[in-house]
View 1: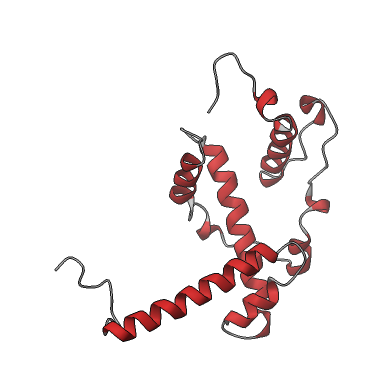
View 2: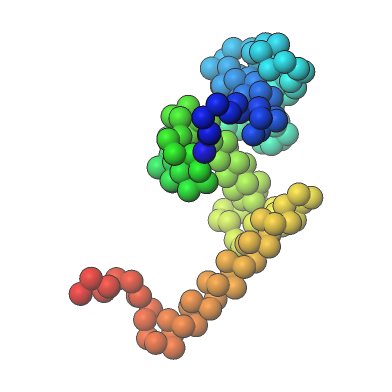
Length: 166
């Protein structure tokens, strides 16, 4: 939450750099070149088509446009929960684009071995450097899924959740 009289760079020293990177990303998505880095007061890495993510170059695909806005409501709620009282629509749209692109790349990479994606495919995909936390979370969710199945089997609730309102 912003305080009266305070400025963003005071609270977030890299805010200008992040704003410039966001402007470059949005300009790139609209087919324009990167925005000037002079507005950020420093050098900003060019994220033009030549310098896009390695996944785009590797996979050569973009997520279908039908997935746009898929996580907008959830992202607004997450951003609110993290302290952004009224998230800007363009920020939410940018986060949605990034999330959809990441999930598309993850699933496309995991699904290269066959028709359907198995848990082992996701494990293999998340074993790269920098994905240790994601892999640990996947393992945790798998253990929880097994525990839930066991609990439902014990209580005879194979279809648990369907009759909650009755």
